Amino acid sequence: MGNATKIKATKATKAQLNSFARQALNGTLPAMPTAWECAKCGGTGHNPKTGKGCSCWHAGYVKFETFMGTGKAQFTIIAKGNGKLPFYAYSQLPGFTCPGAADCLVIKLAKGTKDGWCYSFKAWRYPAAFFRQLQNTILMDTTAGRQQIMAAFHKLPAGATYRHLVDGDFRDLGHMSFAFRMLMSRPDVKAYGYSKSWPLFLEWAASGKPIPGNYVLNLSGGSKYGDDMADQMRQLVNADGLPVVRDSFLALPVSHKMPAGGKLNADWQAWAAELRLTAAAAGMGKVWVCPGKCGDCAGGKGVNVHACGSLNFNMPVIIGIH
Image (cartoon, rainbow, N blue to C red; front, side, top):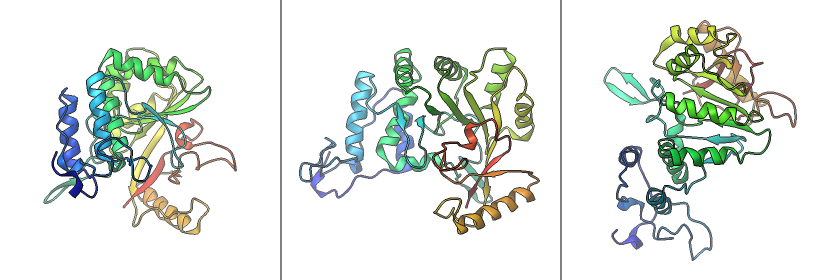
């Protein structure tokens, strides 16, 4: 792997990671790129000089190599969230599992294309996030892998709030069938998510198969299927087929990045006002502006309520892109 002592830090590019994922999904462990070599820990994940952990790409690769060899998860399957997402969450690879994605992945320009506004790829800055998404995508394709996902789900504490697919989407009916069985096996879990895979939901509903009553669905913006199919989804809100559709979650253009400080901050209020004007110009009525932190958008102090997970918020939730 070359002279690791000359390498200051490990790094990875999106193109490199896309190629790596594609090979791994085909059952082949790619060779570790030289740029991932780590002089500090040598892939052990432990820096002997500082006594601290090392979260480099080299260490991540070593763990993923073990997963590919054994089939046993080496990265946490369902992760406990952070300050931005304080709930339990399951992710898969964005792009590879998103049949309904359009503008969020690629924006067409007059002279070509550029990356869209999909936030999931930002997580690829962190080796553990990328390898967890890739690991989970592979687990979903085998019976033994799905057993591991189910086991992780059943370890959630009673009454936990759970977001299914922070990254990625329902790739096919097989994935949807497994996910719904999993959610129905724990009716105490309060689950929610976002999806652009609307034809799968409509097909499922038309078949008369049950949809878990503890799952709240947000119609994710940037879908390639358009407004007509979104309306079909909304028409099923009060029907037996899809009683769990809340409304849309949409990303709208705004002049600058969301200010820090939360919804009580004056700068944030001004930013939100601009976003509401954009929504009004698009013909939208009442909307709810996402403050950027799940669980921080509704309720008073100590009240952990989030609009996207509640059927009581039957209006579009909007967030800004710039």
